[in-house]
Image (cartoon, rainbow over all chains, first blue to last red; front, top):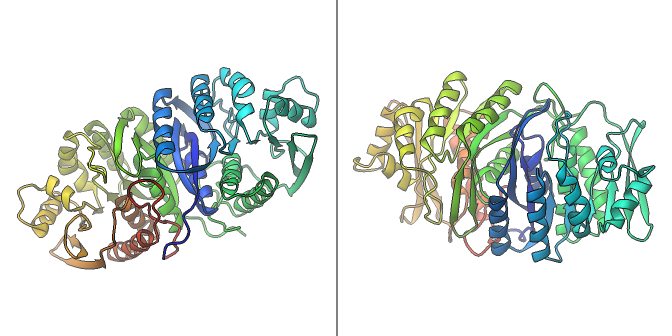
Length: 261
Length: 261
């Protein structure tokens, strides 16, 4: 007897040939957490565990054709947005989400690689702010991304408030890229509610931790968890996968996403 | 404590947005069997569980750049070749394999989608025959592919003999696409050795069974199994994943590749 069918998570993201980040990270995470990954490719990157060297955006029409085919064939229970690469694809994804309302959307606003290379064109920031955030269930910016998205705000709470004002239902501001002794992630929600999560800071640098966390949230939302539950469980899964990760190349550690929660 | 580092399997294949076949299937399989997947994209397809509708080959230079970056950064323990899409990429992959000798290569000669659509140009057949088979540890054609590759041979044994004469060390001719009551797969090896495997035929049609089997062989070779061991274990893993699969879309069943062997 086959076990119960897994809910489908549509992933719209870029490929990382090292398998540390991008669609492979999303696929591993969503599979490990009991959902089925449906990967739509937005960009091909040439990258390894040290940095990204080349980003080639897929023509927007082909991104849309991939996603529409999945949405016509399968019941999609959550959507995870990773690297969108350019504003044109960002706008096309906005139209796709509007045409399929009611599906939880996790938006990881990927702009820069772990090694520092730019992955997306500047014009995409405006699409996030003006179009995509209002369709977002949970946005997951790291500290640097939250500063790019809300450059005039004074602190994390003010930055999150700006993104909530743009229409996102929840904003998880991540602190792994800050220099605090522990890692502090804060979930800000509409209505002034917020929850703080503190994690022991792990040594070293990690490749694909943001993809892992956002995909884990999407996989858990697809299975009917509430946002606070999904965000809490996804952080635990991600922390464990980092803690059990490996240095497979010359650079950042790759998470072990097979860990069972 | 992190568990021992997984060996890296370089995958050179196409993406299937349904997640049934292609790189998602490879990534799930290689992860489940304890290796690390490094996915190089050769083609983007628009496909679902019914058929493939569009195949866009990635420019060969970008395929090579992705693969070379991984090969420079990580110790690659096995290479899995799936959809190569065109002869130019086939020839470039030949050059890559020649530049990195000694790594086991599993060649799944993908030409046609499960729903019948052509996935590769005809000229790629000549590259398989004249260049890639001689660099292949295990080739995994289904019955239809073995007939395309050796059209004048009278039976499976004669077809396998032709592919072995082209230089492949082992040829696993699969019989799931035949109409025998059971599925018979036969492993033919240099020196006239062959082993026959019989599996109860499962009802229905499957999306990504060939990708699953070839990736499982690659993951097991990467961990030091002999070819006969890897081929036997990979078939058991694949059969279980099919038997526990789900109909997530309107068409073929998608394997459950999380099954632990």
